[in-house]
Length: 174
Image (tube, rainbow, N blue to C red):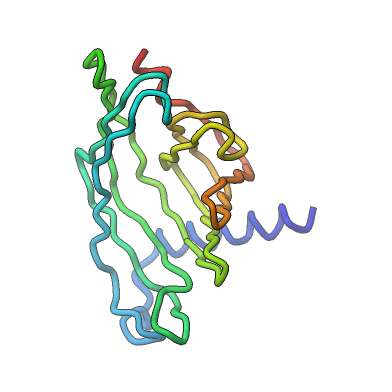
């Protein structure tokens, strides 16, 4: 129960930070330089990697930006906040079937020394899961709500849902 409370608390803080004005200290502490664009690249996945068929994923509207909240002694980010509109076009490259997905959530990402990372997310975001690659089956998942995604150093993903929904975008492209 204690972990659930702390997850909900962190997610509430992430939502409050994203909804409010940029903090006055954002441009002056710990090596941060204020909000900067964080473009989300396009990619292709072969059949069987995420969906039963090959897919292409590409940003149609990308206004994602990030704010470094704190850094490690070497200057690398320790915690970053991501927010902004993100509409993604996902296409079944074998049939041409396509869909648009709103992935405009807000996330605070915490990077750990062992190469793992933890995402505290409010709102929708897209995550790819390989076979046996996490707590969701293989797919290209739109997760919406308040949740945490823990990435191991090998990118195994563990989703802890406070509340929300999951939807495999692959099913929209069959």
